[in-house]
Amino acid sequence: MPLAPDVDLDAMGTQLAGYTGADIAALCREAGLAALEEDIDITHIHARHFATSAAKTKASPPTPDWLRDIYERFRRGQTKVPSSLNLEAMTSPRDESDDKGGV
Image (cartoon, rainbow, N blue to C red; front, side):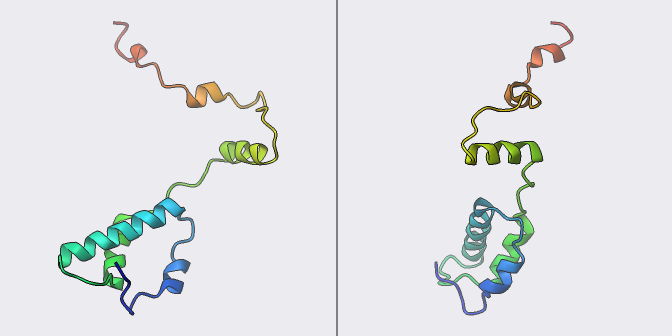
């Protein structure tokens, strides 16, 4: 759906610091839904729809330092993870059988 003339993409861009591409896609999708909820026959998405969407859509949490380090090592072609990072503990599903009172 096209944008209405009242949508200022430059101003919107300054308000989206910290948003990922997926966050911005969700924001746009929500704006489109807000427009359709207002009027099923609407032809343009207006700034008010983005304002409604922004109230519902927040930026993803920042990437933790330990994961950023892994990304950087991968980018540089270093596939060996330092032993100081216990990746198994970070990525293994939690065994919930311990939470059942020993049953």
